[in-house]
Amino acid sequence: MSVCQVPQKSKDVVAPVLAGVFGSLALGMVIVRIWQRTIFKPGFGWDDGLIIAALLCSGPLNIMMFPLYVVGLGRNMWTLSFDNITKVFQYMYIAEVFYMPAEALTQLSFLFFYIRVFPTKSISWIAYVLIVVSIMFGISNTFVMIFQTTPVTFFWNGWTGEYKGTSIQINDYSWYKAAMQIVTDLCILSLPIHPLMGLSLTLKKKARIFLMFCAGFLITVVSCLRLQSLIKFAKSTNATYDNAPAVYWSVVECDIAIICACMPFLPSLLQSLFPSIFGELSNKQAYDGSAGTHTQWSSTTGTNSSSQGRSISTGGDLEMEKERQRERGSPNGREVAWRVANV
Image 1 (cartoon, rainbow, N blue to C red):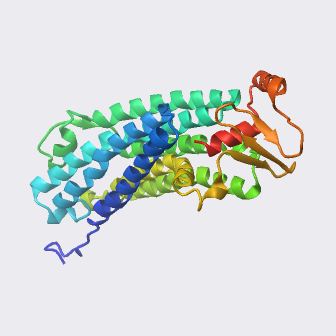
Image 2 (image 1 turned 120 degrees about the vertical axis):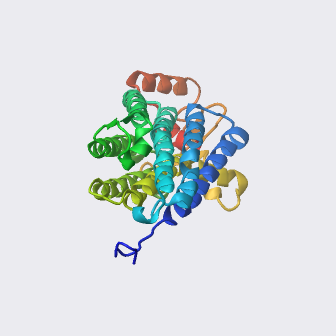
Image 3 (image 1 turned 180 degrees about the horizontal axis):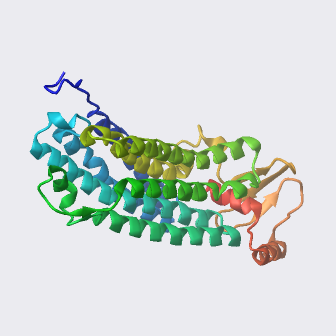
């Protein structure tokens, strides 16, 4: 019991532990992705550069969990010195400034990845619209985070009551931002579902790829947990304790988003490193289970051959088929399957 006869509570260790675990996983997955994209299958693209930028923004967010632990985030406010309370708000401010750029850059990485793998007109147009939305949402929210109080120093000094300043309705804004984030994430993560369902792959491979892409919905689950923590914080009189879940769920949300953005690149790397073990995932073969046709794709020529004894897309036939697909604005289903397997 404290001198105020209030039970001592603490969840201070949660933030640094989660930051250490998920931050390390995010870093490892980005390294795996870049290694795969620069050494095993060279083809570094916009989506790869954006995920690196997202990692650079999430880095300070993860790192700040450790000094926040030292100064008292997750402990009762009345057990901390005035200086430490001020530092809690200062470090939280730094973390908040990096949160939105990390989220926006990860969303952009997802979208540019979709454009590269699913080069259809419908997917591209939707992706470009979502790119504009993500950029505008990310920039506007970053500015709001930076200038949510006037002066800026009022964010960490205002709690004392000794300084004059103004602040936006942060609780209402946090609700709006979290809700918009969830809606945007759902739109982005749902985008590849339809083209994935139409891939010319066996049911087993299709299920594996589908689950790999849909793992991104974990981001929405964490966003909902973060939103739930904001409900409690909105009614809090113990900011350093009650704000801890909102802070560490924000970190986990950013890290899981980066991890999920890199997951499609993991099977391909495993195939390159351990072909005898992961040979069944061969990413140069697609099998149309419905038609019973085995198709072998060439990564250099883009041609394929059919085991049914008829070349369905060779020479002039291939060019005619590609032209028809371009006119319809949709690439060949087997080519998309090959693209997905060769990310």
